[in-house]
Image (tube, rainbow, N blue to C red; front, side, top):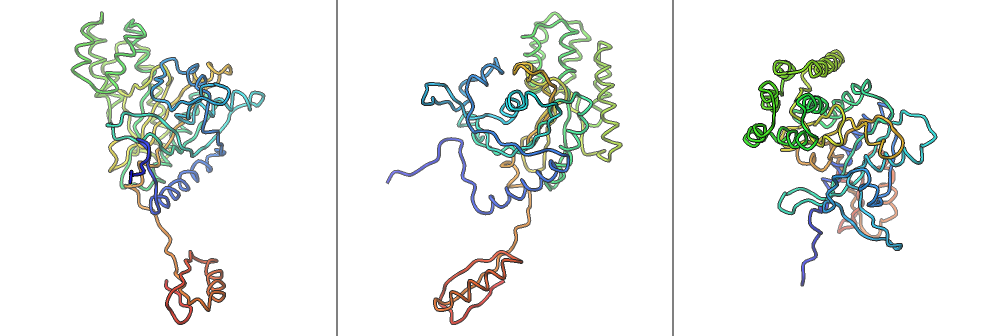
Length: 367
């Protein structure tokens, strides 16, 4: 018989993992709710044109696409940020921001089969829409509280700022294409390629030194290391803002729970300010990621600043311990079904109960 299989990149979540996932979801959403974020859910399907109009560099092959009854091209959502932004630009067009939304939903992206990554993941996050960078501490403290609520053995939040690299590219008079290429190499810490590429550009020695040092400006002394190689006052001004952010987080009791990484530079055409990623022991990639994306709403016809992040629940199942409530078992013979059901009903007021009809003489409870 031909084996029945799942599509590539899909995964069944069973029993214990379902319980873990639900408890993690409850912990995280409790944090979101405490910050005043309200739940939202959107359709699994969006028009493909919505993504194409907002993301010019969209990789079509990464979307699950199909056609509806009217011949319109549709796509499974790849994230929750764009659907929520669409809601704000339409359903809340006449409402005044800020908007605070929280969500926990499946998102889909086609990945190379040999990459070992899932094409369907559960994303649990928030979006703070309508407030400028002065609200960054709120989003970051929420992320830090979530990292604690996850309950991993150890964790850290790495914070960067894409404006730092954008401004450096501007001061070095790089073209948009050159800047994106440079940022990509820095973000991937591809040092050999970066060195070779920088030598093809018309740069001052100070600018070249800056770009070569940037991938290593991370950890406790990241801001000081970055300041030492700044080649323009505008760069130091951005570092000053990050120092102020550091002071705020430390004053709120988060010292030692975060660090800066100024070499983070993903998607310069999307992020517009802080970016951050959360790591926990036992997982080789970030389990939490987000940042500021003030330019997104311009493309939807309602300019507003925004910042948010999401947690990939599926990555946490193997490294986080959760408390699974023990079940009582009520065993009973066929002739005492009513008594067993009544006893189980009473017990369920205090605990989980399973009913088992078996070869026993009387109703018995196994705790």
